[in-house]
Image (tube, rainbow, N blue to C red; front, side, top):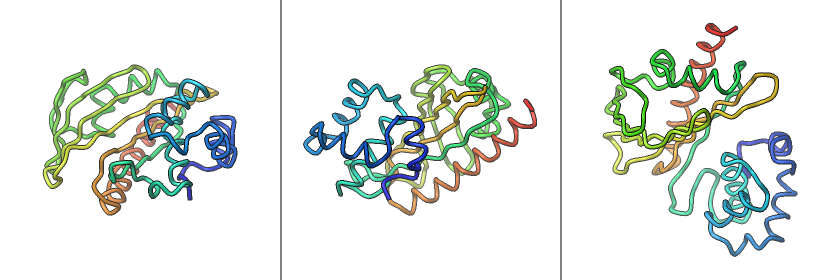
Length: 204
């Protein structure tokens, strides 16, 4: 299994199937490139968007045996959960960064304004900080669980789709092992399910 992203989805959003990407990257010399170099290749030569730069690179590395699904070059794990929602990109961005939206998917213990450098706390001994904002497409958060040795990173993406829809995705990076990865998969899957219900109730 190269990725939880299906062959149909990767073809739809990148113009190539998984088999075609594997062959393309091999011909481009990616077997001798680092993770970052493959990402850069996909960005500059093939014009993939950031989300799919990482998806295709990860799938290629799983295929070539560099790592297991969800594992990076440092031996850390990443989990990604996505959902297509029935609102346009700008509308969803405005909602997820509002206090009402934050209370649905992030659930901070206290109200805070989501700006770069802002700190927050989530129930369960979790502390975070807003590291990067690229409206209306991307948020990058520091995520520090008091039970974990290292800080991790949560990337939030809002990607425009046709017919006034968008994809909401959460990628949690730097997880220590497969058990923690699956725990966070469940955590973020639940958060996105709650967001989907809130979006439908508010906008449909």
